[in-house]
Length: 421
Image 1 (cartoon, one colour):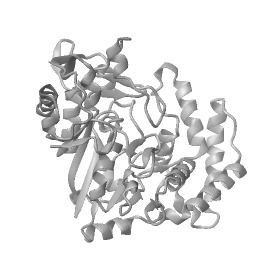
Image 2 (image 1 turned 90 degrees about the vertical axis):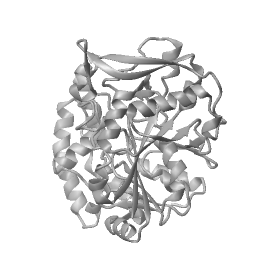
Image 3 (image 1 turned 60 degrees about the vertical axis):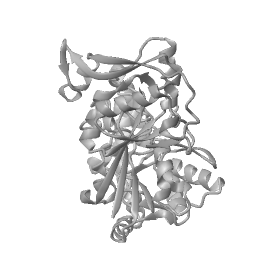
């Protein structure tokens, strides 16, 4: 059996979609096992540019089958829109996308509560996407969730929805919102189910049969390892586990079946929402603006900073990463000097990421190493030797600090703009 997990080693937005799209052609299955449509992968290939939130990025290879595991929470409207856009681009989805019947549904009240909670927190808001992710995972753990399987038994979904609306409308009203109507939501979600029913199955036997037949699986993590609710900067994290080990609960893959873990890391670092970003450039300088971007799939402004080796070392070793896929190296071509964070100081003393909580992390002093930039266009490089010597030294410096080999280097958004070392 062969199971490869691809995960982000920072706070998301590392370029996992590019990495998955580049590698997926060598696999039989690609799968999502955590998160929801708060995460997004941007894929640029011969068919165009696609921004997808729920469908695995392997969908662009005709022979690859795509699984959406039980660990994923689903906004049906978003998923239907994605499938329709893929079909419009000429991509076959029938008998290629399989949605776990155990996956939980994002309901309208989840999105409303997400916004109301953020509003009520005021200055203490965590900076969520307001797409209902936290509330739906809270309901899942609190025995209040609704799943696709609830439609299989007549009357079950309706009864559970009534119960939840009785509960949720009280909370919504207490927070100043308007009550939701049962009939409207019930009709809407029955329509969603009718549209997606051909894709909804029990995915466990598909996974198990594939593993026993020695098929190759590529598993896509959503978000980044540093947004994990246990090991990330809590409470500025996401609602689901983002570690490689989440594939067991979120898809049904035994831990011993995982044969390779690939970490995707950006050549600098960005973050959206609240929470610490130790190497963030907070001024209005051209450098700061160059490292800030609009998050392609969520529309939120990214905060930008220099590469943080302390964070990436922690996340790669926590997850047992075997090799790194370095992205967006071409963005750094515009700088005369580039900084790399090699460690932290807190109250004047050296510390590690794991020594601090999320609030202390905002007070640390990053220790930087400055290296000379290469000031050359590298977007046409296809071999490692094509890169300027200073770009090679930058890659090798990161590799040494993180103590994980960099096997792939992305020098542009296109699939072919990738160097394999």
